[in-house]
Image (tube, rainbow, N blue to C red; front, side, top):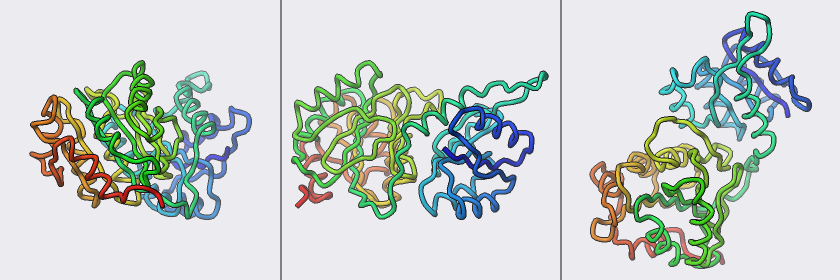
Length: 323
């Protein structure tokens, strides 16, 4: 695995170089302090991943415009720089970690998070090939009362659906497999928990399956991230919807179903701005009219529909079966 490094601190560049080289099978493709130089180097010599300081946000935009490449943000404190980290991740960064440091004895400290991140990338990264056909995506978000609402939407969708379906339901890690198995009994589409690196495929349903947030990366693959921390709902529908708005090249359908609170409303608004069909469940058929209400009040929902109308509306938009 070859890593590019761009950071404005010479000390941090050297520390990152040492961390990368501390693991067999990894090498440094190039190092630079300058974002413009990083864009040039990435175009000439595409690495498998890039470690980048927060000052490289503009460079990240140009690098990702040329094709998929996982970018890991490295900063002195992810918590302190939370707002900047979140903005960079919404623009395509894969994850963020605290920068390792050299201790007074000259030894590396606090490199575990970065090593774990690189190990994850090495083992699971599945870039989207250039020219790969991108299916429509149907993004479903739900909370209280969600399982039954999700089932009623999914049971309308036919086998061979020409869209990929991704579900984010507020549910603990321990119950995700059970939810996926139960939904499988209510739909003709194959359903399973989403794994790190999965690429959504037409005619299949992937369900968020950890206490971390599910995100769609710029390379078209799904991943999990603990950022942003401190949100009341896990996995967050807003985090997923916002990642889709930033990284999905083809507008699809997003649906916000029954649930308390307002999670998903902001992200649904971002998808509507990006040209997606956005749907919120109506009050009469919601178990808890919280999230759909917030979406309606914020102007995020292009349509407000009864639960029984949502599956057919999805079908009409994505075109039904593959031919």
